[in-house]
Image (cartoon, rainbow, N blue to C red; front, side, top):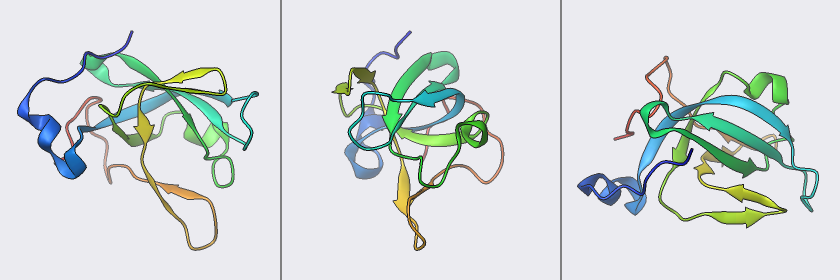
Length: 116
């Protein structure tokens, strides 16, 4: 189930997109990706479950990602990435020692929570 495209003023939030918190429910390799990537199933609570293909394998194992809360950009459009319909962008920053350091809340919050 995919979330509806937001039509509220929140789409004018940080970076001109809607940022929300979700919990990774499953993670598997994106076998068709040119660069190593994972397919994440992310629970956004009342907004549903979304899929994202993300290049996180340099720093994160699938086991470490499952159960972790992440920040996602919601309204950037759907992209086909190596045969996977990627509905949200998982946010992270380049780590000094390589790979992507994921962004997330410092304590547990409800899935679907709007980031301000």
